[in-house]
Length: 257
Image (cartoon, rainbow, N blue to C red; front, side, top):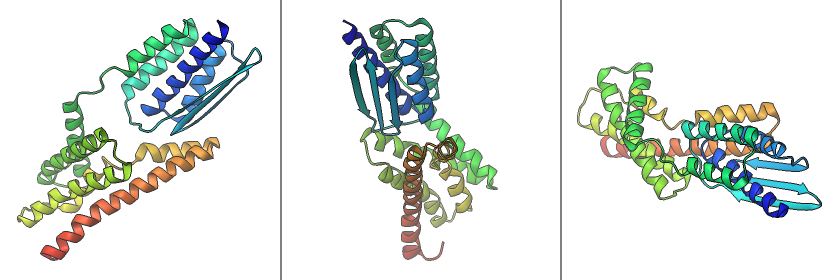
């Protein structure tokens, strides 16, 4: 019976770690949350290892070793779910319910619907608008930047549903984003392409990842920092390729832009 309870709690802790990473938690937060859960339930001899793509947990209890690893293939930022997961972790540490009951609460959070699609499209559009204005664009530039933001959201959502590699997702998104001001320039519209592109590309810049890399370096978690830094480099390369393709094609077809 004790073995079954330990295995159930092991599964709960691993799924909690997976949910935290998938919704944008920092690696130190994942390991700290799991360690606090284990301590709350009296498991003292434990090891927790987490990187952005994997969680490995080992519990040594009453002469037995219980080990489980979980692979994480996708992640995104959902601060609402992340806040609810943190609250659940604190509540479980405080109340110590059975693992089965805690698992049900965890499933309720992970299975809940995310932000509405229309909210995501509006957010992308207005972020592009305000960054375009911030970098010196005029009202007309901001107006067309809104459509660039919508294109980015449509591309990333479509590629995410197909579980596409992050490199190709960002290449396609940046290509669609640049093609809109390119078409406007070709049609003779008085827009500033550089301001629109700079404003819209802020939607794709991995700012959180860059910040987490620096935080992991300061904390001495170099493996996680290298993993996230590689992701930053891949995204940066994808953005450069995605912007260069339509711009180069337009120069060859229509001359200097």
